[in-house]
Length: 300
Image (cartoon, rainbow, N blue to C red; front, side, top):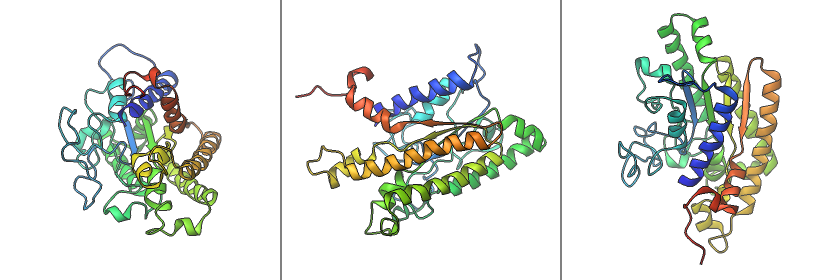
């Protein structure tokens, strides 16, 4: 939902610009590059060429976006588009599927709709690029950056100045754990065990990113997906009440992610990880809609 996305932007920019960047006057971006990992919330075209039901390169997607339908799962800009604008980039971060040459030096978007932390997540929808696949694509990009900049040390110095945002996990619940007719994960794991398994796999990939130059990483928690339109339609008793068993499971994951952020900050030298509390942002918007502009119809 656009109003949720825009409020996430506010939080991200407060963190990024308040803690990591020095405001400068001029045309240059505040950071040299911005790398993006995630799912449909930030995919901007990587699924277009995949054999997948999870595509958004057709109307009405993009009806409020200057380029029309591009593969963004939105009527207009996504969170990361706005972040790129506020950071001072003169164009949006390109998807990995089309990023070429010098373009990769400003960053790449690796996100893929239906992707999850687990490899099997979203498989009923067809092709998608899991988190590990996105990290592998980033590793290829790093090799290209090294070639463009001349050597490994120069590339490492360049990448440590960049911002990385990672937001995955929603599909591991909606298109895996809470889809027992297709996936066995809910029979294999309790909600706590499943959250632990996800965090363990997540941490492994984050360490790979660190080993390939990432130093400033923002990790998005899972929002209240038990309040998503699909879950309200299928599992809510009245079509309005959020599905608590899903939201409760999300909170277990988010708690693990917060602990992981602390752990990685303590263990990895010269790294800065932050946690973006998407869950509570969602709740605040619901509880205090007037604070966020005229996005809500009047109550009747």
